[in-house]
Amino acid sequence: MVTFAPDEIGLADKSPCAGIRADLKMCLLASDCCKKENKSPRDCLKAHTVPDECLQLRQTFFECKRSLLDTRRRFRGHKGY
Image 1 (cartoon, helix red, strand yellow):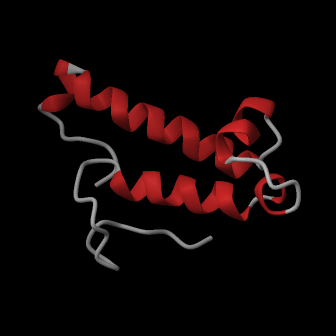
Image 2 (cartoon, rainbow, N blue to C red; image 1 turned 135 degrees about the vertical axis):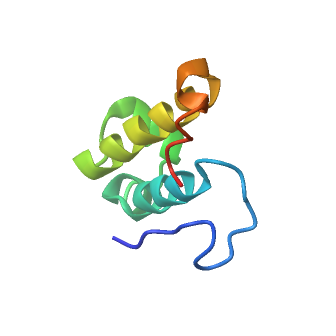
């Protein structure tokens, strides 16, 4: 799987968690649900018809976004860098 970090390819999005977001998008768009069944990535996630790798990326993205709000983790740094 191709991984994107904000500084590698020059993603336009420089926000925290941007690399994980890009990985999740690419994983969802490469899944059979989106390719063969022509469903939207959101519908595929709701139906749980995506590979486990995409579900793990979704959980990682959730934890990254949650760490932005967690005051204890602000001192340790954000996940996803």
